[in-house]
Image 1: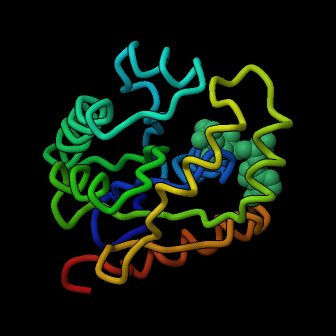
Image 2: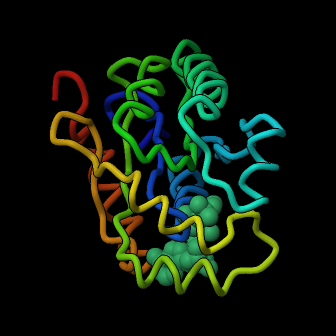
Length: 180
Ligand SMILES: Nc1ncnc2c1ncn2[C@@H]1O[C@H](COP(=O)(O)OP(=O)(O)OP(=O)(O)O)[C@@H](O)[C@H]1O
Ligand SMILES: [Mg+2]
């Protein structure tokens, strides 16, 4: 059963590294009963290598990545299927590109995190390609969710069950959806 009267949601979980996009995104997908995808899996190999070497991506690097993600989002939108994607999508322009794949159907969950906690979380993590030094460049790039972007901003240090309750409530109400 869908939790939303507004059709299956297509959710982009965004935020800086360490904000919990993967952790929260997987749990939201499970809660909504829709597939979960990792946005990083849509990067060309050259982008992964660049990030592993500790170099931030530029907008030209991000272009093929965002196009691939928008195409994947379009597939779900056209099939009227829900989807959750964990994706840094730090700039408004990146989110606009993703929205081009889903129109008004895209719903953004922004996990807002302070620098100190982001550093702490990322530096504790091993076996991940995002070196802690890239966290700072992410904060420099970050453009928080704007009022006209359908979605929700939540404090990323909130415990997971409380985050899930808030997401469920917002999706059920159809917050920010066309016609709501
Ligand atoms: N709400 C939370 N409360 C406490 N710890 C959390 C929360 N969300 C995530 N974490 C922890 O923070 C760390 C980073 O989470 P996660 O890997 O999901 O972040 P991410 O945004 O996907 O990062 P990246 O962009 O580098 O992939 C993990 O150790 C995770 O367990
Ligand atoms: Mg992640």
